Length: 57
Image 1 (cartoon, rainbow, N blue to C red):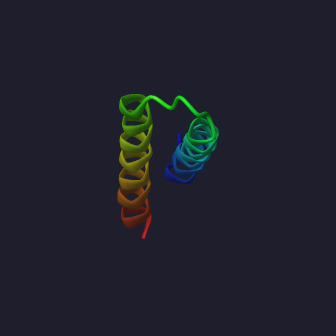
Image 2 (image 1 turned 180 degrees about the vertical axis):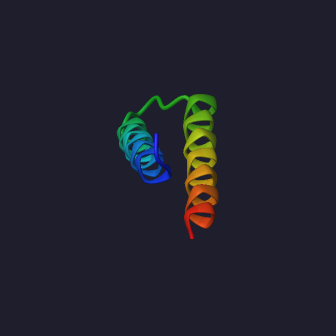
Image 3 (image 1 turned 90 degrees about the horizontal axis):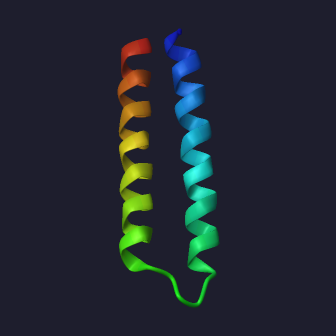
């Protein structure tokens, strides 16, 4: 898999997590631990994307 393809894949996962976070925050009984775990996963993806973008120049 090329770096560009990996960045696209991670970007899609990042957007999906963003959608899940938005959906979760609309629920009145949001689980704060679950929401925190989603946000941490999103942050890790963002860091991976940034690292790959640095590698690709």
